[in-house]
Image (cartoon, rainbow over all chains, first blue to last red; front, side, top):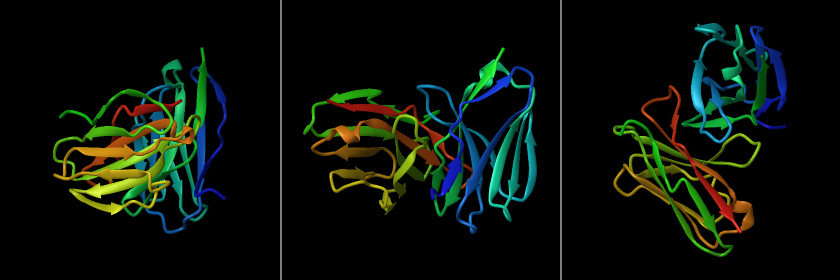
Length: 109
Length: 112
C-alpha cells in the first residue's frame, strides 16, 4: 500500500460544475496536508494547505480533512478549462512531503 | 531571487556520463529539497538540507547520487555513471517553514 493514494483519473468534469478530488493516506500521525496543481510540463504549484479537521476555503477551492478516516479532498467550484491539470496530494512527514501519484483533471467546455 | 531557479532546464546524457544539476533557492529559505519525478508519477523525495547540513538522504536511489549545499544556498545534485532509469524530471524546492514548498521549474534529464 502506498503512503498516499490518489485515483490517477482522468477525471472529466463539465465547465461550471464542481470537481471533487480525493486522497487517502496511511500514516495516522500525519499533521499537515497539501494540494498542488501541476500543469503539463510545469512544476507543482501549491494551492491549498490544511492542518485541522474540517473544511478550509480559498476562493473557488475547498480542502477537506478527516483525520479519523485518513482522508483529504479538494473541491473546485465553478470549474474552468484553466483548472485542467494534474492535482497532487501531499502529506507532511518530518520535514519532507510524501506525494500521491496525482489525479489528472480535465474540464470540458 | 524571486523564485527557485534550476539549471539546466534540459539535459541529455549518454549512458555512463556524469551530470550535475544546479538549484538556486529563494533567498533566505534555509530548507532545500530534491525530488525526482518520473513520467505520470508524483514527485519522490531524494534528499533534504537545512542550511548546509544534509539532514536526510534516505531517498537517494543509489550511491551514484550525491547532493551538496556547501554554503547553505546553492545546491548541486550529481549523478555519476548515469543509467536509463535515471531519466526523469529533477525538482528542487525550498521552504521557509512547514507551510509548503516552492518548486523550481525542474531539470528534465534524458539518458540515452
